[in-house]
Length: 161
Picture 1 (cartoon, rainbow, N blue to C red):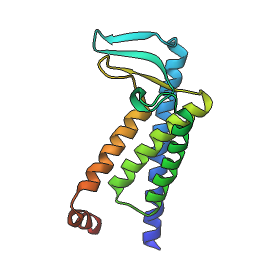
Picture 2: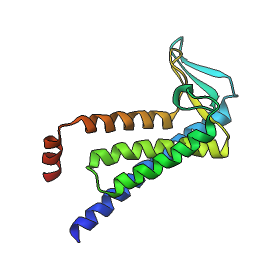
Picture 3: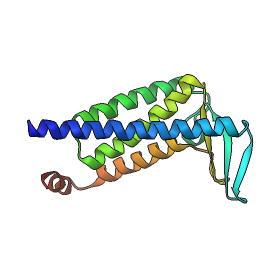
Picture 4: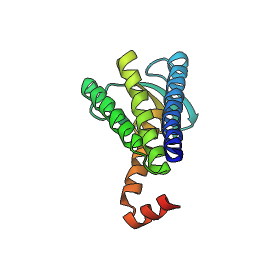
């Protein structure tokens, strides 16, 4: 019974992290939509960093424009897959990484459903604009790859401690 209790806490933590990512993503996008006209830019660090109000019909960093419906289905499938992964009780770090990806995918999916496009606003000028959801997805994916590349013996040792 104790193992089942720990699994429930781990799952709750996954959903809490994912929910926080969605909340931060949607709050920041709402602030941008309400304060910066679409297409406008507020310079923060001259020539380097700005807040921009950009609408993106594609994937992260402006790729795959025009495939919004397909991307929405892929995001939904990704959220389900990551929920299944977490339900199987991965290590806490893999669960955190999965929660970041699922939360980010849910944030952008929410935009696609309610706005028709994704709001991007972090603009480094040398890179396509992005948002909090894109950041969470990227960090989570990097962590999943990192943890996937660990030697199996080191993962087994981490789980037994």
